[in-house]
Image 1 (spheres, rainbow, N blue to C red):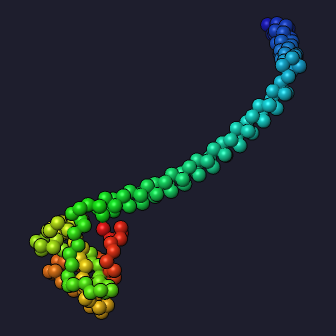
Image 2: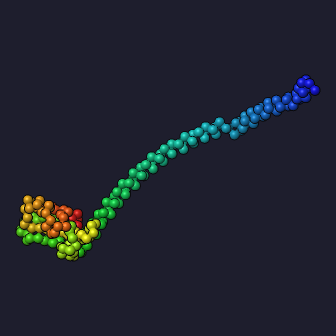
Image 3: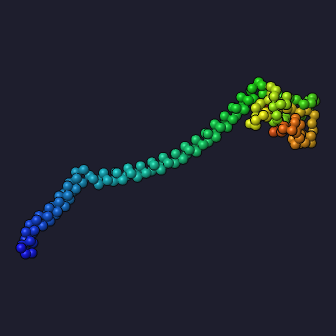
Length: 185
């Protein structure tokens, strides 16, 4: 068998292969054209593209709303923390034990005293009595005192002195006109 015999034997199968491949392409084109006309594929493709673009716009809007929501949640948490702290102060302020304020000296008419919040050792009677409150420091408590008859210079010196023992400290000192404020608790 020479090459001519091999080519002549394979020629019908090659012809069949080319005929099928050409027919398959034309059959595919025919089905595509029929479907395009029957089902309006171009219109469907255009509508699909429009829907995809709209979904992209919705996603952008959704992301922006998520950012706004996160900002609002942060502001809400800040407000809730502030409200919780204010409620804690109101509870502390309305506590009957905490209404006791020690006075040093006697008030004179139209005299301004000094409101002092102190922290000191539990051993001192002022820090273990009914007007004291717990503090964050172990073995120490806070107490509130109103001092009458002190002038401004003495009040400034009062801040630096340990007047109720070596472990006591002045946390707050301000002029006092006889009215307790909510923030004083």
